[in-house]
Amino acid sequence: MKLGSFSDRLTDQAEAKKALLEKFKPKPTIRPVTFETSEQRKARELEEVRAKRVADKEEARLRAEAEAEAQRLALENDEQHQLDLKRNERKDRKAAAKADARARREAKSAARR
Image (cartoon, rainbow, N blue to C red; front, side, top):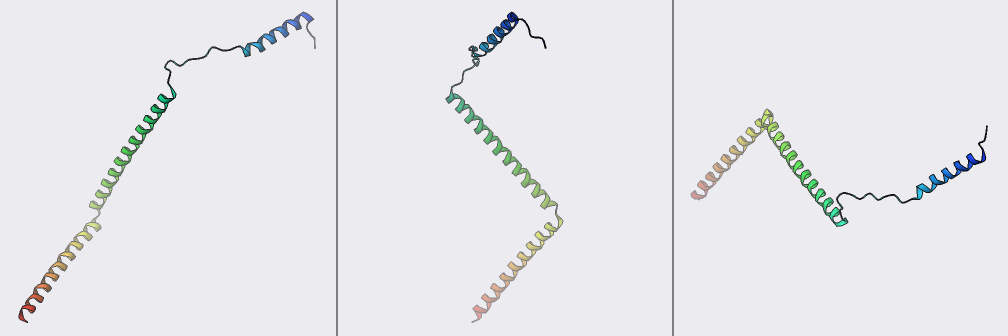
């Protein structure tokens, strides 16, 4: 390995020192185009959070409505459920007629006494 001359080493050393000192020079600050104070930033972030919550709430409401509608349609289309509804309606109607007849019979027997 061949070493350079003394003057070459001195120039290399000077260039290295310049490069090292260049790192420590202050760099120009980069200013944002629109300056935003911390209060303005907090207000903006708060507004974004509120808007997101409103959007999430609306989305959940729409999803719940769609789910309820789908469930209603499924029940309408479910034949067994429809038969159960008719059967329960008939049972209620017969029970009401039976109670009415019993009340008339008891009233009639009470009138005889």
